[in-house]
Structures are given as structure tokens and as C-alpha cells.
Image (cartoon, rainbow, N blue to C red; front, top):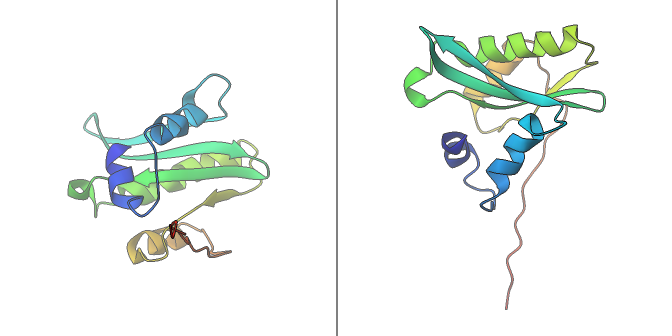
Length: 128
């Protein structure tokens, strides 16, 4: 999770408790989510989180370390977790991706995800 945050979330303001809150939302008492790992020869090579939300399930974060990329681990993992959520009653699966990352966007489209919106992050600094 630290590697994911360092790579994918560097532009977002974060505090020390962000990671723990994200994990607790999926794994803490009464949580409606979890994490799933893709393993090869007994070692994790990719992970995704998931959490039930009104109207379906949110998939993410999705992370594969750089040295494990290019083998289809993330696309297989996201596809399997998405199918699992749909099989268990989720009306739809949602995931948030960086539009500047053509690799992840292409793999999500390949497994059936469709872009439905775009967002922008705007940061306002104090001008004191």
C-alpha cells in the first residue's frame, strides 16, 4: 500500500493516518470490503482492494510492483474480483483510474469497464 501511494497518489495531499483509514475501511470491524492478492508460486504479485458501496462495489486500489508488470496479473485480478462482486449481488462495479495512465485504462476497458466520467484535482494554496 505504501508503494501504491508513493507511485499513484503523489499529487494528493495526504496525512499519516490516510493509509490506516483506507485499510480499516476495508478490513476493520464491520467493514464491507477487503483486499485480494494475485499470487504466483505462493508470492503476491498484485493486489486490489474492494468495498461494497451503495449501488455496487468499488474496486481499488490496484497495484502491481514494477518488476511484476506485463504479465496480466492486475487485469486478471480486477476481472476476477469484479466478477465475484457481481456474482454476489453488486449491481455494478466502479473503479477510479488515472486518465494519464494509458496502460491501466486499456486493461480496464479490455475486461469490460467503461468510462463514465472524468474528474480534476485542483489545489488551492494559501496566499498569505
